[in-house]
Image 1: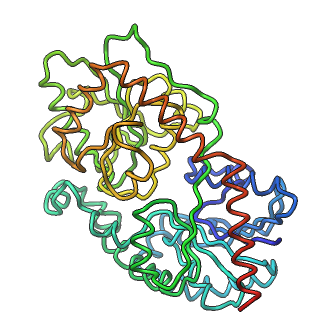
Image 2: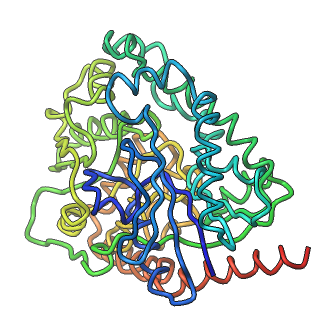
Length: 422
């Protein structure tokens, strides 16, 4: 069966193209698992900042589509000014040309954030769209925790001029959410993983068939096992985050401030994915008039997947503080390592983590309950270890390579057969 993916990242081609710091590692894992199956012939289309001819690498055919607005700083700025409608007019014919070359039996569109989903109305080839995040609810939570007036007050003036401000990002998100609603409305088949994405797609894509298929995680997280370090006096918390307001960095700062006031608590809170140069860090510190360093927060910046796996295994508690998520891979990877987890009960998180069995769910954006949960697990090693063991057991089943891959192929076959019957 010939399958064509449209993806937001270069997947396995990132290695050949030497693309640094690429996100979406779980897709590389799924790609490798599918390519290993003899019944699947996989092609992947993605946007590239360079003009690159199609090529084959490790069993996959890759079709890069040059997007000039993802290249130099000047072209990215012009792309922001011109808008996405202009891009779509140029890009959709290229996507259709690739469909014509590949002649797939099924098209799999990963995510609704890009314009790939618009090809569904331009081809008779059956398609399925995987839900990653869903932009319309993200719009509602974009400024969660931090008032827009505070964000604008402490943003750099140059970011506003160069259309790199959070306000511009919000406006762009609104536009893409509008396009996403059009994409979901035309979608006949949807793949999701959580109660949250099922409920939201029943609103935005009411006529689609909903399939469930979990994700594969990055390889290093399957093999490493968390163990509680009984000899360490200082509690080590860890969070994987990024440069988005709704990721909840202000909750980390507020929670840490509460923990600092708890006299018996000695801790370090490592935040991977953020550095002290990031605008969100500057904004939150200025707003709260507190220093991350003085609150025992260590901003670790970007790390490789191997480094992250090792950092998780050597920490005490994983803290998920986002205000909106579907199925956060960072949480899934922490569970896969076997860590005790504290997570904000936002979006699809409750579908991943059972409160009181694999970790603790707390009210989104409420630092006092987050701090209380940290104190609870720090004081009860037996409970923390039990949660970690249960988390790993659940995650190993949920992200089992053979099962996830076979389930996805089954979905492809069902969609293909249904299309032939119609």
